[in-house]
Image (cartoon, rainbow, N blue to C red; front, side, top):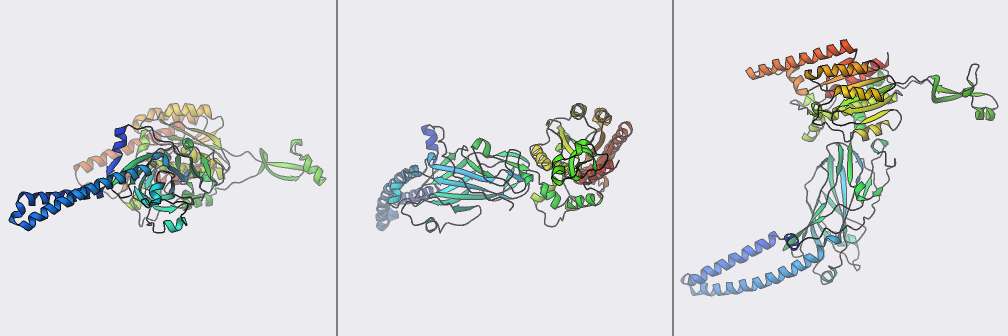
Length: 574
């Protein structure tokens, strides 16, 4: 697992829950299944004794005497049960004070999507009211059921809640290992900590949705020592948690150190987990082929000497060099004139204009697993993996990240602007932090229910960009927005090179170009409606290309990386 190991830092004391009324506290206590069974058995014996008494033993003196014995046993059992219940609930109250429990979590602050991680929860018990019962041998351990309120961005891989026994150790205990050596092992797992009365719970999760998720309260169900009662507690999420980040700069946020060291922060800032796009997976897995083809086609950073501002190397002075190029310190050290050479400023700006409106909320549904991606090995795909490749908007962001990486290798600056309910602007930049910044900026971007305003977005972008750039407009437009779209692209084309990428749904493509044959009148009508729809999109693209000179592309989301890279290369060579 790609996870940095961090030294656990003990948490601060959990604050006590708000004061509860008597009835609220009373409702926290519930009889256990064991107590219910005992009461039912006692009631059944009482019914039998009553039946024998009322029928005089069905005419048998022996059975009649048995009824008297059963009455005596029922009375004795009731007294013993009441005493046991009272004693058990007193011990339960002693071990179930909310202020006695401390919870701290240890988890990565930034994680890539679809990479399994472990959430470690350290649960400590520091109450003193149980010690008299512990010395008498009544309380050796606490039976707990734990439930954690994890973010919705995570998919739980094992059942929750988690049941385990927490051993209660006294200073006279020999060792932690001897005390809990009989602890059952299961997944999710629990393990002893290096402190008494502390246990670590580890449960695996799968980040299945991009964005920032927040941990909530922790919930405990505590069983009484005799297992007759149980009590439910809420441990508030105002603890101090330990978070650590993944190796590699791709998953570091701007306000986090670049190393994988432990970060201990207050709960208001440490109780969140950010799920980012899996950029390393893009390069290493299904999109590596696309990257290799692009590199072989000429995607490489070429540096040549010019009049730019980025230092290239140091060389001996030659006639015609400007005075500002002379490095006087190096000349004095080497006893000959040395000149600085600079890279030529031949880079360009690449800016993505990304639609986050309602048309981008579509989710691709694949009827055939082979249509997911030609570069993916489709054997053994489960439902989670199929959902992974069916996320429409995530594919668009993956294409943006991949092209940004390649453009950055070309020493081009890359920027991003979104519209359609979410307004984000990342000015064009280049360098080693570009991908990290894009990952952080796009982590919480999701399609909205608003309709994107193309013209307003174009006007805003024109105000922000002063240098001629390549603008990649990614959307899924309809014919009714054609006039506004043409105005927007025409405005952008006056100063910039525009690439218009109009996405097409996978289901529509399969209907139009697949092997599906209409079987009835409804299928035939649907097919002709889709043909008309496709023709209107093609006419829109022809109008755009003719009136604005933009490079118009129509593609599906899973083919977007290849199409965008080819368009970028063609414009870069002009």
